[in-house]
Image 1: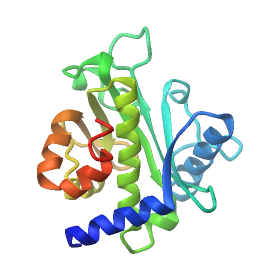
Image 2 (image 1 turned 135 degrees about the horizontal axis):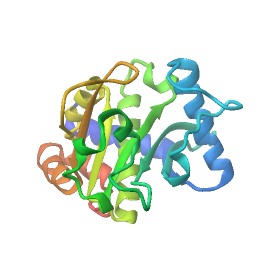
Image 3 (image 1 turned 60 degrees about the vertical axis):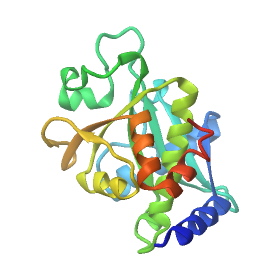
Image 4 (image 1 turned 180 degrees about the horizontal axis):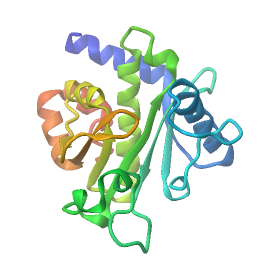
Length: 218
């Protein structure tokens, strides 16, 4: 996709979808119902309660979702899970798979894990570019929320295919440690947010401009 074409596509998707921080009971219910569709019905990864996918980290997490503007339907979601206050170590979902020591070099007070990064099957499987553009909208939402809560680093347990997809958009996570088994092989990874954005501005300025809203989010 040419740069001018990419900018036009990003403008179009932003006119049709928006990112919101899910705070109200109804908004969170939409998040958990979408996660149920993706993680329980489609992938069979997680257990469900009454048509919702919820775990013990959700109460301490910050949630975002992508809404289709016309229908107000949630089509994407992700969460940031900071360390649980008062617990030693990072104490995020990734620690239960990899151990706390793997990410011990990250600053505890300003690190959070990105998890439950999900898109509706309709957009993941549409065969076009919409899914990739909506991933960038989720990234924009995560970045804005990270700035609000004072984060400097992200970590994640990621499908290697997603890592590669993000790199094509100049969103670079650094692998750390070997692949681990968690619903298939996953790569532990982290990102220094400022360094990632600085590199992204050089490599893909159009995407950087979209994800940061012209630099206003960071």
